[in-house]
Structures are given as structure tokens and as C-alpha cells.
Image (cartoon, rainbow, N blue to C red; front, side):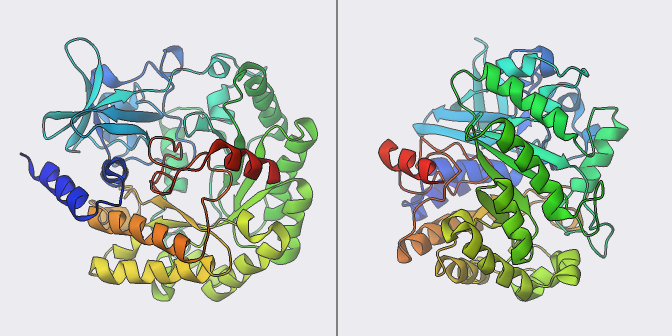
Amino acid sequence: MGSRTALVEDLMERFPHVPREAVFKEDLLRGGVAFDPSALSDNESGEVKPKSYFIFSFDHGTLPELGEAALRRPPEEIILTGGPYDLRRTVVSVRVNPASPYRVAADEHGVLGLYLDGRRISDVGVPPMPEYYRHTLSNGKSVMEVAPTIQWGYLIYLTVFRVCQYFGAKEECQYCDINHNWRQHKAAGRPYTGVKDVEEVLEALEIIDRYDTAKASTAYTLTGGAITKTVSGRDEADFYGHYAKAIEERFPGRWIGKVVAQALPKDDVQRFKDYGVQIYHPNYEVWDEYLFKMYCPGKERYVGRDEWHKRILDSADVFGARNVIPNFVAGVEMAEPFGFKTVDEAIASTTEGLRFFMSQGITPRFTTWCPEPTTPLGRTNPDGAPLEYHIRLLQAYRQTMEDFGLSSPPGYGPPGPGRAVFSVSSFMDSLPARDTVEEAAETAEV
């Protein structure tokens, strides 16, 4: 039995309260997966929904290093089921790593499977090409370019500003490749719109609404790089907010509206609310004071950690605590050269941050760190954080939620193993399932 298999099975045995599906999912998210040519898509002309590169690369290599996977994109996500571990349905965002011990390939019958150390460990499902991806805007742009969907079609991801005004080594977050991702797609000649026109966004949403007859798309997220000055003459609140206003006027109540932006002053946050945004994600990135300064130098320079946290708490007065959901990048706590040296220290620090926010009724969520190689932390930490950190974080996260009587945050689809669709971490897979009546009531409330 290969060493990676042994490690995964040891963690499943040591942490039996963490769903076994989440153990595999976190390992795939932190370390990536390789794709046999038999498992790649035919891009937008095929039957499989291809990876859209909706904001970051989320790959362990640059496009030129990915081989055929750069020409024939892998699927946007994969679903794991069955196999020797009897995995329940698990949606995983695709992060390509040609050197990964995990590999997706078709067997002699053409059936896709996930292989670890050469052993088939699960069946693999891929997202079918949605009908709305088969239609273009009047100017010829694809829906996938303007309004891609992720989380198995649950979320429309509107990256309306594809670069960040925190620029250069002294300002960029040290784990973030948004600016490089923009550059590599432009260099490859791919369509990758820097600032999306609001009318293009509305036209793409009209196509989605027309052809998404099952109403699988339930929410949209407005996001992009930080704005320290202006874009198209608008400050950050007005820039992202004016898209929300246009969407809500054209499609009132069709989707849950979310915005990922900096932690802004309360008056700016109120503008988001006035524009029709329902959920606010002022991401705090990493909890530890020293690591925030070292890994988020632009955020520290322009706002500062203490003020950032104060603004998050203040925003609960506008949106309500349940609808303020800041993200952190799980794993950078252990990144060299400044990160914690032990899993115990890293978990203690992150849990302190969880308790700080959850004690106020605010429920953070997290994205599993993918060490992209063009970032400073990716270059010095190609293997990311240990898998044990990610598994213990899931345990600590659920326990902290229970300590403060909180349930899964709104706008993320159903929680629970076998039910969750949130694809870039396992926090929703690791929470208790809720009945459909509860979920419907909360969606209506939002």
C-alpha cells in the first residue's frame, strides 16, 4: 500500500468524526489531481463542463506546465462516489497537479475513476455541459467567460474585475495569484475580460435564466480584485454594488445576491445593502496578527488588521450577523517562512479567530489553500499545509459552531456529507445535514 494511502487511512482512523469523504476532498484540494487525457474535456464544444478559471488559477503549475490539460481543459469539478471506501456523493473543485499521487482516468470500459497510488478508490462523475453554456452573447462572448457557474451549478461566479489594485511584492497577498492568472490567460490568447460590462453580465444572466429550467443556479457572487482607488470612476462599494443593483432590478428575487469585497466602512457596507446585496463576504484571510501583516501587506497598509476586524463586526449591524460570512485561506497559517511550525499551534490560532467571530454570531467559512507556484508562498511551500491540519480544522470548525449554537451559513447550498455542493473546501461536507424545510425557510429569510 502506497504511503499516501496509508496517511489518508491513518487520518480517517484517528479522526472518525470527520467524514471520510472530507479527508479525500481536502487532500485533493490541497495537493491537486492529475488527469489522464481520457478524462479531459473538449472545452466548450464537448459534453463536459470545462474548468472556467473563474478567479484564481487553482493549479499547481502554470498553463505551459500543464501539458494537454492546458489545451483540453479538465472538468470544472468532479464528483466522487462509491469505491472501496463507499464514498457518498462529494463535489470537489478541480486543481490540476500533474505530479499528484491522485489521478483521474477512464478504465477499459471508458468509465472514469479516481486512482491513488495506482488503486481505484472511487467512481468519478463530471458535470454535464449546461445548456446555457452552448449559447453566446450577442457580441460572441461565451457565457462561461462572463458568468461561469460552479458548485455543480449552484453558484454563478461573477468576477467583474479580474485584477487587483494591491499590486507588486509590497502589496499583493502572498498566496494570491489573481494578477498572474489574468496575465497567463492573456498570454495564452484566451478570452479573459478584465472589467466586465454590466450589460454583458445581464445578457449572460438572461441566458442562464432562460435555459436553467431546473433552477439549479440559486445564488450569484460578485467579486474581483481589491479597489484602492477607482475602476471606471467608481470606488469599491459603488463598483461592485452597481452590478448588484442592475441584477436585482432585472431579476428581482431570482438569485441570492452575494458580494466578496474588502472590509469597508459601515456607510459603504450600507450601500451594498441598498443595492440589493443579501450576503457580505469581507474576507479576513488569516487570523494571526503577525501573519496578517506578513502575508497581506496591502490590506495591512491600507486598512490594518484591527480595523479590518472592527469593520466586519460593524457590518453585522447592516446585514445581520448570519449574513456576514468572512473567508479565510486555510493552510497559510503553516506556510514558511513565517507560519506556525506545528499543527497544534496553527489550529489553536485559527480556532481563536473562529471563536472571536462566532461569539458575535458571525460564521466564517474557508477556502482550502492551493499553493499556486507563481505566488511567494506557493514557491516556498509547494506541498501546502499538512493534510492533518486540514482534517483537524474541520473538527475544530464544527466544534466551535456547536459551542456557539450556530448552523451552516446561508447561501452555500445544503450541508452534510453526500449533500454539500460547496467545492473549494469541505466545511459544508463536515457539518450536520439539515432537512429541506429548514433550508427552504432560511433561503426565504435571506
